[in-house]
Length: 167
Image (tube, rainbow, N blue to C red; front, side):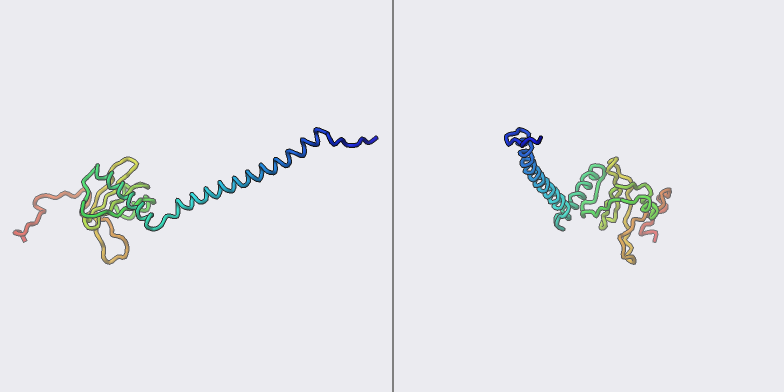
């Protein structure tokens, strides 16, 4: 015997209502997730797509921060604002010149072209690694090179000094 369905059954009412409410919540959560993702993408894009002027200003602030820190350790030339490079491949750089033999990745190199001075600074230990002269080679189209003027074990005596009278 088949029984007719009851229209006032509590089971049929509770099953139909959650489906409608669930769809609304799902749509709202989906819309909210799209808004959050769009906001995050916008933030990332605005953070990494600075104008050239903003990039230049950020670079100058970074250099100024390093210069300020190095000024506390040693006297720096006041006649010019230095160029700065960050070491990112220390083993290869160390092979190029003896001046770079003690560099590590992350070291900062301050280059004063007019004063012909290069300074290697290590932020991780807050120490000066090396200081040397900069010799610009006009025959090369590359950056000026740092070349020591004398070997590390060389010494100078008063006899080595030449005055105008002796010439």
